[in-house]
Amino acid sequence: MTRHVPKIATTKNEWLYQQVDVEFPTKESLTGRELYKTSVAERNYVNLANYLADHDKQNSFSVDDIYLVDFHRLTVLFSLLQSKRWANEEEQQFIVEFLTQIIYSEPCQLYLGFKDGEPMAAAIVTQSDEELLVSDVTLVDPALQASFIHALVTKNETSKLLDVISDAYLEI
Image (cartoon, rainbow, N blue to C red):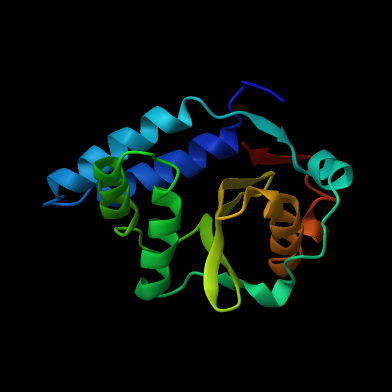
């Protein structure tokens, strides 16, 4: 585990922060961005390939349980799951306001994992030519983390990239 913030994490964070750099951002979305910035400062990074090798996937999630967030309703579900990382209900509302402003664009893709029709997991996958990051992993049941990450990297074909990208990280 490293406190060193990889370039790809900075890329993801800048992408997220600029989502509310609009002409008339809401006060709530700006507050949510500040809350998010504070939480990111406490995150660590591990080698993604090592994490996958060291953790049993437990077969709870399959690639068919993972969906690319590509329309607003899924963005809302993604934001609601992400907001659960904050204990305070008011802060959760600010995070939802911040994250629902996301416009789908490179270099980041949002994903949701479902079980029995219910959203159970969320993450962001960020990719550049030289680096890859799986971040913002949020689960209703933390015991499913390894299974979700295994299914996620298989779903978006990240597992193929791990052979050619040496700088692949998991944000924890």
